[in-house]
Amino acid sequence: MRKILIAVCDADGSYAEKLAEWISLQKGERIKCVSFCSPECFLAYLNSQSLDIVLLGDEFWEDPQVCEEILKQGQGAGHAGEVLWMYLFDGECKRQIPEYISTLPAVDKYQPVSGLLREIFSVYQEWDDGAPGQPGTGKEVVGIYSPGHSVWQTPFALTFAQALARERKLLYVNLQECSGFKGWFHEEYEKDLLDVMYLCLEGEVNVAHCISSALYSMEGIDYIPPAEDGGCLGEISSADYLRFVELLSENSGYDMILLEFGMMIPGFFQLLGMCGKVYIVTDPGEMQAAPLQQFRRVVERQTETELAQKLIYLSLPVISNEVYPGEGKMQQWLWGAMGDFSRRLAGVSCGAD
Image (cartoon, rainbow, N blue to C red; front, side):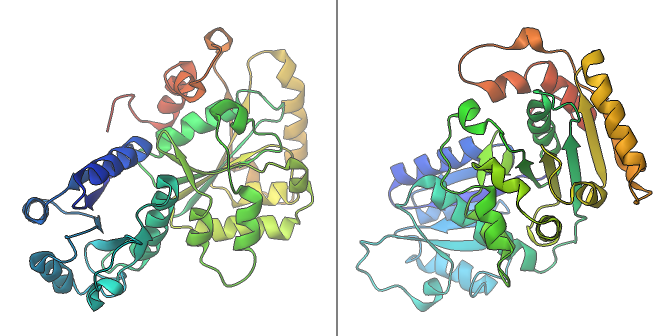
């Protein structure tokens, strides 16, 4: 997948450099980010490279040649042209903002950087969907489920998602009742899956904006934080689950949705039927053989005749000897046996893009 190229342009060179470094650190698998503190250097770079997003800060939006570039593309409100131009708004700015700048999407440059990044990609997803000349891409839903509730299901799901995200624009959604994300990754989430579902199902809403309001990234994986109150997952209707997955598939802006299941939530087998592929994973050994056999019997009783053809049964690698205490769980999984297994399955190499 071609990397998105972002230019951060601001007269405060330290700010521009730090923001570019942070974006590259968080989204390095998908994004290349460069910084500029002078319009001259930026314009020279623009003439030699095809940028996707330009973040304009102080002095840049006042430069006549930068102004000419924006007007030449006729971007208007940010939904046309080859480049998405965005205005880094400084609340302290006392200068009059030209009309052509006031029509650009604006983001507060001094908000927390995680929020700034979510706003940028919310606008970009909407712009990219409406940009002229964009080829249509197939939307695919992939499921992962372990009948015996393997503790290695999530490490597999995350490493597999990371491998697939190298080639596809992928969104990972964890539907487990007790995901363990906070304990593993030491992250505090302001919103989670339940908030996103509520927003998306309210009515006429922008699904990409709903997702971006809670979107996080880790090792190149875009994900919605799992539900904190897992008990609520069993109280949501099957119709709402089916509608939510349909919205993700059709309106999220992602090419692939990877669903990791926990309990058999309402509409479980119908949701599996919405997937193009479902990976049924078990640990090695006889203890998970009985749950797997029971699952196969339940599948045989389902009315959807094509479901069985979508199921791919996998035995996960033995990795009990690779469990180490402390932080860095995702790195351990990615560069251990699980990561190797997932990359082989996805058909990608272990090297960098």
